[in-house]
Length: 376
Ligand SMILES: [Zn+2]
Ligand SMILES: [Zn+2]
Image (cartoon, rainbow, N blue to C red; front, side, top):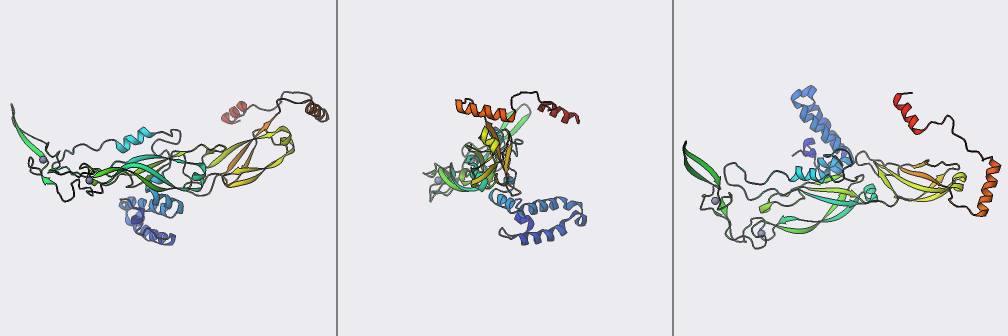
């Protein structure tokens, strides 16, 4: 319906230049200042289409999953938090629909298939660099034997003799107020107006069969835990070969043994021995991009962090990457052997480190927070 390419009037393989030109041309025609206020909506649609297609990453997302794919996790359930907001989407996707239409005329056999939701596990590496994944799912496909007609090959549905093809029967009931006409769906044909006397042997006249199929899907760079990707028309086929519903992939992030993700940034914690913290060191850290040298400066303090730029996760829409934060913990020996004890005692005496004192003038975190809040 709202095809961005159609709105801009360009083909699906148009390059950036063509998109820009098409936008300029249309924007001149549709701008409310020239075309009047009634073109405001069309101009807005045009702007959204251009904004999406002129950004290679957004365009890729749109190509994969349509406009909904651009609204990452939490589109319906608010920001983050509830990784399993399934109830909500199930209700909005699968609620309603079905049942008899109350309008007159026969009810068509073919109906749109249901949407499907599938959890897809993704590793941090896959979220960072993107991935192609084969996923398999059980869903309805058009019956190969009858092609969705529901009839055994060579046979056809026949007009229902009870309702004469109208799908409903009219009854006249006498009541105190006179004759009342009531129309009810025809029981003989379930309101379809036709009868299938020889249902397809493979699908028992349903026009579709349940099959396990494998799909190759693209996991775009930057998806996060809970991001939903919509694959339009890749859900299950409806009864009597009706159009397929949509398939939603929900990303479930696999826990990484070392890295924790917060937004586009990654965090990891290292333990540095007391003496190393004082002396400084260089070590190799295995990042998502391979081994990287990390420098720990002499005199590093507990809770200090070393930031490695651009080694985080890729951003879904604006491109670029987050950072990798290496948090330092300083390890103090719990037990000392005789020799270590002697050396430390000697060191302490050289440095005059014998007294323990209260830290004057040093605010507690609570006090700092209080001052910040009261604006002091
Ligand atoms: Zn069939
Ligand atoms: Zn009938």
